[in-house]
Length: 423
Image 1 (cartoon, rainbow, N blue to C red):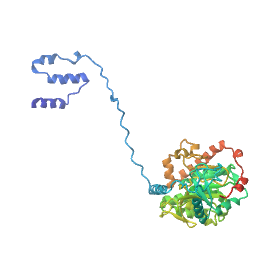
Image 2 (cartoon, helix red, strand yellow; image 1 turned 30 degrees about the horizontal axis):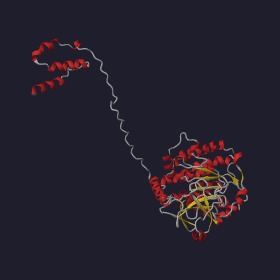
Image 3 (cartoon, rainbow, N blue to C red; image 1 turned 60 degrees about the vertical axis):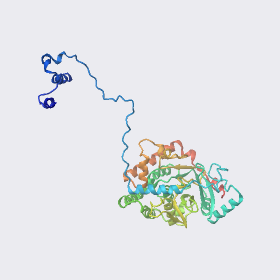
Image 4 (cartoon, helix red, strand yellow; image 1 turned 180 degrees about the horizontal axis):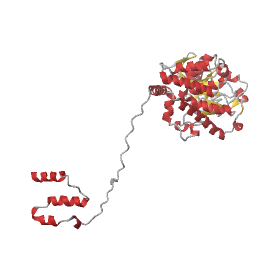
């Protein structure tokens, strides 16, 4: 047994062995294993006597089983700012539950405008106790959202009076969603609406988080290009020195420098800023009466306060109330006008939102993914991306405007504002 092994090894180690085709190779191997008594057969054997056959090879699997799924891509690396923002948004969202049924009727008496909702159902004792608590907190109005009936907001008496004092109101109003650091998109939308007569000095505005900042900018009379430059200053500061835990201080400095001294006068009665008040239960508050420029800045920063992200603390104090980001309860608050057009910086269809007028859904081609938008909302993008967001907001507003000509939808709404009863 040892000799054949040595021969077999010598056969394949011979450098002169160069098979030309499969038949030659098989003939050489067969001649190696033939016994000595058939050596004549070996000598007379020629490959040409073998019939040629066509052999077909296929690389396709014969099994009917489906191929294994592709390997799971490695998890995306997140920056510290994005990871921190996601963490605290998730924790805060767990604290915000659906509105308590105490004090809110399930849609009875809703006239479709978000006003005149029937409230205080149940027995008289519960209603009386509930109203006494509300009165102590100076709450004058409890209103149900016409698009999302499970969303309810409250207003103080001063805020309601500030709206009533406006002599001229133009409908529709415009509401800008929470958007984080995506507010260049809102600035682009506002630029188009201002240039084409949809937003006038008498147009009511409302916003949460970044949307509230944009409303204050519009009311201040500044141009959207100036606001975009200020946004780039803020973004550059955060890119160099960090975003998480210090964005609130940077934002305050930019707003103090950018807004005029009479910004609070221009905004009172016109701009609704949404905040979320904690204790005794989370609820949305609409603020549109401001005592000073500092009070206005405090309101919009409170509306933007993602717990633990804007500053290293779980909540902030606003007018002696413990509050956090308004977008957690009022993502797109309604305005004081009879009709509100809602602007969302995120694809509304992906979020399952209804009743949205202007959003990236207006131009769905060649857009950033929701994941990219969310990252840019928590950590500032590069300047060229901020410019692109500004441009896309402008283009999306133009698409919406083609279906809603200004002469068809913009009208005086003063009679509606004056007729709204105080709840």
